Image 1 (tube, helix red, strand yellow):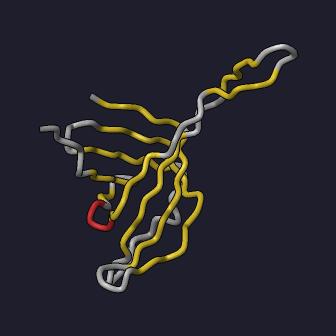
Image 2: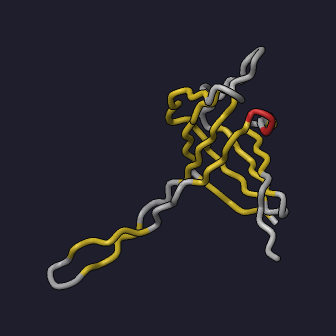
Length: 120
């Protein structure tokens, strides 16, 4: 029987936002790109762009301010002990709010980081 990671905790600038977190998504990172050459296809190295998105639940009372994060730090820890540190985190976009009518109102927020490193 296999076990899978099913819990993720997130801190932004030292503030634990796990209680507001609905979904964490680690975006793809492009490190190289195919380029057309005269008689073949080559590869061009790219500066990696790290990013992630959060689906955040809106609190009934009060609020959580993620729209002002510029050059911040995010720490993501999975329940298997893996820990990732994102540096230079800035918000790119706040998506539309969505409510399912039963549980909560959520917003999707897109972030970009200049560096990502695995701890442990």
